[in-house]
Length: 304
Image 1 (cartoon, rainbow, N blue to C red):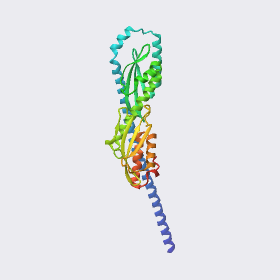
Image 2 (cartoon, rainbow, N blue to C red):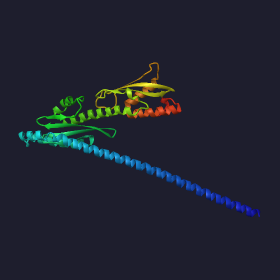
Image 3 (cartoon, rainbow, N blue to C red):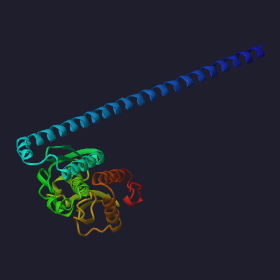
Image 4 (cartoon, helix red, strand yellow):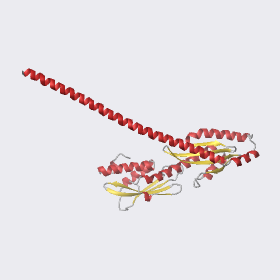
């Protein structure tokens, strides 16, 4: 009798173990299924985002092509009149046109593109910041004895005449386009960074953001937690190199002159000097949120 009871208990325990194994396997399969569904949803979201970016780029390119076409069409009647008074078989001009074709082909991927006209070319310089397309600028170049700029949409504060005198008047067309692209791309990048400050209200005080027309001087205030104290910092970023998007000088002060956190000021100055402004502020914002929840000093984090 006792032996039968033992066998019964062993059978029940074995059955329970099998049920437990089945239950565990089922839970693992369900968890794997949930994980796969989550990954699938993430991939769908990424696909939607990529398709939107693709459509935005296509729309941007179509707009640029339309602007170039409209820009050159305005000159058609004038160009036709000039063409009748100029020799189309000028070998010097033919060589210049061939050189211009090579330049446009070489620079197309850098943001410089263009379309040949009857007297030269219409150049489009497209600017970008970290993969995001920004503004486009246009120049109508005329190839005569010397290459000259007929008309353009370059902002007045860009030293176009100085760049042209330094390079274009010496026949350095490639260098002229490259230097002009550096100035325009850096200006658009600085302007974009300054505009993005308005999108970070949790750390930057929007009403304190000020910049000059060329975006070579930028000032703003931002709040941080330092050693358990709420501190309002005043930042002054100076861009002396007009071909760069990063500041050449950074000055960090306190709104309350009685405070003193030299190590924090040093780390912030270094961060603004090394990182684009939106990324640097995002890092400070993340570090600030960590401090609020954990009360850890800013300098002990690995954020920067």
